[in-house]
Length: 146
Image (cartoon, rainbow, N blue to C red; front, top):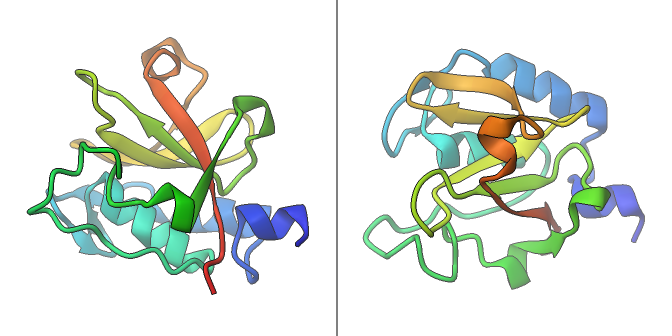
């Protein structure tokens, strides 16, 4: 399998990821939001992953999403952990915003940036900035499961 197929769906490219992300900037935050324009961080991740050609399921909010299955994203089925030096646009970034558990997810873009949704809405930030760099738990690469 070609490297580009590991990081993005078959119908996606780096430019597609950037274009999808730019179309999401400014979306409104809504806790458990799952519709375009009204999302939380996982809802935004699901939307972009789907647009990139991945079939990643939502997680059950009744379960403890802070457990080993982080956001219901079963790494061994849907994604593989990768080193920061190997990160490409379309990869996933998981962060610990407070406490010891992963509590935030975004999609990596070019030049050390990522799109994510905070309570202020969907925005693009630099994961290399002091505000985020120390909170990175891991990066992972989505993979096709079909």
